[in-house]
Image (cartoon, rainbow, N blue to C red; front, side):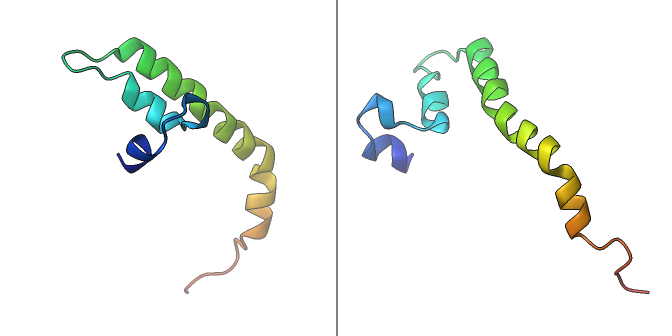
Length: 66
């Protein structure tokens, strides 16, 4: 809730603040909230899929406790 009280300009709000604005006093817009959540996670998933081979190469699969 701290960013919601500090940031007043709608251009500077983060995705989590935007999600909290979809929750009203007496109702919650679940369809819009789930849509925004799905769209906000897409860049993270795409970044992981692109860099997955580098993550696997950096972790040594032969090391560990015997």
